Amino acid sequence: MTRTTPARPLDVEALFPELATFRGTTTRLHPRPGRPDASASSVGGPLLWPVDEPWPVCGEAHGRGRGRRPADIHRYRRVLASAWTREQAPGPTDEERKLLDELCREHRFPGASDTDPLPMIALAQLYRRDVPDLRAGPYDCDLLQVFWCPFDAHGPGGYDLELHLRWRRSWEVGEVLTVPPQPLVVGSDGFVPEPCVLHPEQVSTYPFAGLLPEELCARIDAWEEALEEDALEEEAEQAADDGTNEPLGYQYDLSIPPGWRVGGFASWHTTDPCPMDCLTCATPMRLLLTIDSSEWDGGSGSWKPLEDQDQSTHRCATPTEVTVGRWGELNIFACPDDPEHPHRWSIQ
Image 1: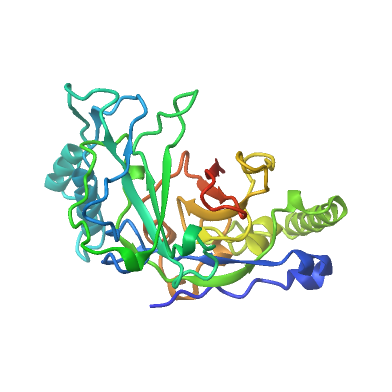
Image 2: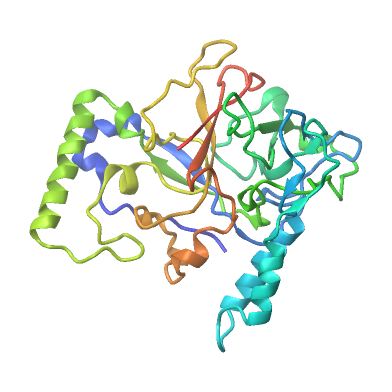
């Protein structure tokens, strides 16, 4: 099934004609639970990975001998989902609650060294043929594969992520690895994606307001303040679950869509905009991929696809089960001049 973004609540270029100059596109990936194979773009699915090529590992020193087992995390989700979809007496039974408690238990592997090679988790793979806004990789590579370490224990503060991106030419892959290495335990269930097929859809997008010319940004702010004042005067009813009764906002309704997406503009709603220049050549980098904890929420419900309108947010908006930080989004940037230059990223 395709996924279709509803038309925006209003034509933002009619209100602010200058925005036409800044209009871009982004491809919403619309991951949904499924059974992808290695020949398909996916989140959490099997990769087109050569059987004779070493699997990416994290070698940075940090604890890796205590956490939850990936198999337990997948089973926990299946048991809980099945319990809540029962027509009769939905919700976990006493027996299921005991099982869920056991599946939530952390396990310890005392012999694990802080520097043992730790298999990274395959997060996603994207074929250029499927994703219109996926930029070309180096040397005509048509396939991007994304990994991360299942512990947020990196960097100077010991709380950062560790990412690994691999470009390849899909037509050169012969025998495919069918059973990739897996970490014994992970630091959080949010590092473990559920297999999802993708429904790519290209939509229009506009930059984060704080990156627009100062005069235009001020006019957008004034327009939003006026809408909020009108809503207060009318004593609007409390917002519905999908957020459609909230006053419109440039950030959440008209510019940058939520969810997993490729290309377009990064949101800086948690921090001030930060220059993302290539550390190798100083070229301003461009957004490559956004990994989001949810496909929409109460503030961005106007982006909920038409095909999902009858679905409840708490059951439908988190198909990948991936959690970034404190329920945020991970923006990964690439150098437009040389895709081989190291990537940078930001959590919002």
